Image (cartoon, rainbow, N blue to C red; front, side, top):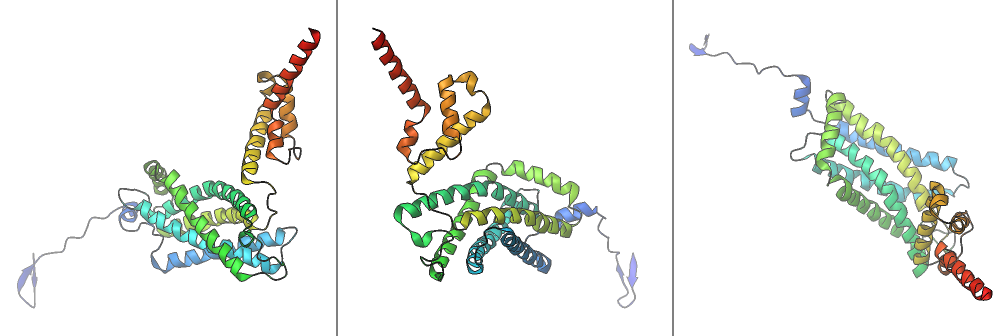
Length: 317
């Protein structure tokens, strides 16, 4: 007990809270947040500068080099998409980190970005194949990615704006598709994995964690992603075949090449089928139409062999 001199009344000592381990304090109060404070905002600005720098480096290394205006139009399309994807990643990180989860928002941001880059490149590649087929099929010249006018010397900004809006929408939809198909079904397993990584490496200093998972790690992923996507969205010649022919031809060539590479072809298939596979899987040796591709398949070769055998038997009789 003590006495307050001014009031002459007894008072009691304030009990200090028990000391906690820094890791426990960080776990409860100092978790890394993706949208908290000026420090996080500055980090996100640095991340945007890193993505733009990667596009500039790619331009300096590409051959043949696009004109400065065409490159600017392609880069602004990708910059807008990357910016929207960044905000979608932040939204998904906040959503995945809520509830009964152990990992922080920052490590969820990095995990979601890794999944989106790995799966997103495949989805965007497949989409661009179908997109070019649709442009060629219905003559949608204003949606021909990388071409902004019928006259190459006078690009049209309305064509650029239409392609930019479409590409931003496609990239955002790709993010949600990968999150729904990959992250949501395995959310608990992913949370346990990244929480253990975070607890053993970065939980003691949330700012260091913020720099690692929102600058260093995404910078490498964004550089790789921007490099690949720039090759997808720049101008390429449209396919001179229908979408059905392109898809079926691609599936057949992939199947034949896989069979050729496995090394088990000679032990599983007859000699004439093996020779046919090698012939059809050779580069630049494929037919130019779907009907020609079908007639050159091993099934057609088997039918021809059977017809020849029947003719030989008739001649012998």
